[in-house]
Image (cartoon, rainbow, N blue to C red; front, side, top):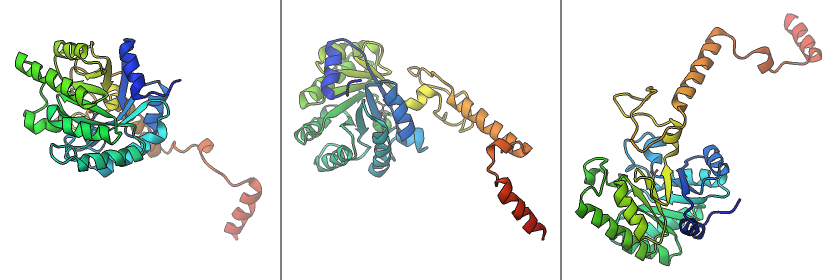
Length: 292
Ligand code: KIV
């Protein structure tokens, strides 16, 4: 195994070896994802909706991100560990909050930060590069801009919008980003951007020609709670087109918990083999005492 660094990701692009990235938010799954040989583990701000049950990514706080990051850090040994800067700490203007939060993330064990947005974020990317914080950019369908976009909509669908995305990508590269996430854009646009950049692109809903792919772990495992009206107990939820579910963990967990509940109610759990007992020597006087 080789420790993955930002330099190693650049080499993977040059060698045309696809980069594998996934999110993680806790110690056990981070350890599994790392052991499976994933190149990049992202503590995504999708923590907000996927794990904490918020409606979107906007409410998640720096403190919530830090708690998840520290747990994931304890599980990750080989992959490059990236932490997402949450909504509100990387908007155009003075960069101090962004730099402070990023430094807190690196002190907690992240090796890079991710931030959403195009050209307007280049000043921040430069400030972070000056502070020795590697930055993963994120353009296209940027979930933190859900209200500005009027919903989760595929971006870059017109020639003008596609051109603007290419300009964003080139500007972020110039500002010092070591790689870019391309989310929710047509494959032709992602292909063009990937071909024009020296830094790697990591796609999610951006087609097969990016230098790598990322998915939200809970989507891949079939653990994402479907939005209403299906609600939390739904087993078969609607999933975005770009998600491939390798497992239906919702179904497996529901079945396991239903079996456990049935066993407890039927008195068949715990069994004798699952129960601690006093030794015969200790049990006899205890029984005798209780009879006296
Ligand atoms: O927060 C997240 O999970 C992400 C990935 C989907 C790229 O930003």
